Length: 84
Image (cartoon, one colour):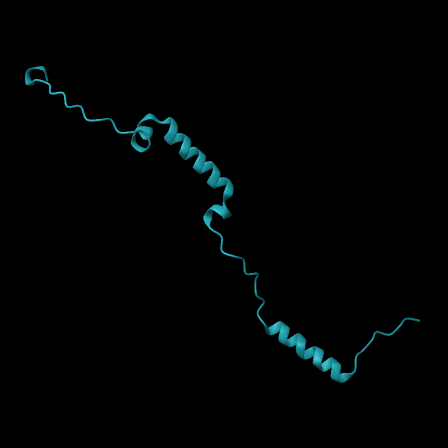
C-alpha cells in the first residue's frame, strides 16, 4: 500500500498558486557585474601589446630617436657655398 501525497488545505494552496503566478510573471534579473576597464577585462592582451610596443620602441633606432633619445644640438658650422 502506498502513502498518499500531502495536499495542503485550500487556503494555503491558493496562496501558493498566487505566488507561483507572480513569480512566473516577474522578469528574471540578470546578475549586475561591476564595471571593469579594458585592461582588467583583457589582461593577457594588454601585457602582450604593452611589452611588444615597449620593445619595438626601445630596439627600433628611428623610434628610439623620436621618443626617448636626447635631441642633438644644432651644428653651427657654416659650409662655404663652393663646398656644398
